[in-house]
Image (cartoon, rainbow, N blue to C red; front, side):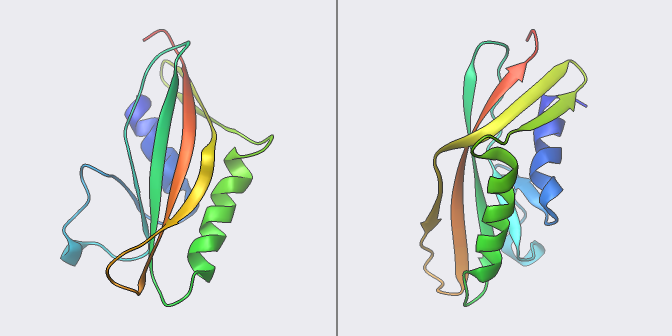
Length: 124
């Protein structure tokens, strides 16, 4: 597994489908809830900013907030996620601010924007 596949695996480990934000299917082909995330990689000694958006179709913030909290439990505070790939590891922690709500023109679409940081423990 390469770096990109490792990040894809991480964002897909929360029980809902996650898409690289550059390859999200057309609206008619995607189902809520889902996650979109940016793809950014580097090598040892550099901290990379990552972000993801959680998307729910609901009149309530309850479900999406529970997902945000599940992600926070894994990567914020003293917690972090270590993801192994073929040539090393990715160390993922929460960014600042960790989460913020975002508007959508459709009132039934709930979105939370997540900030994270990654260190790639590898030679390249």
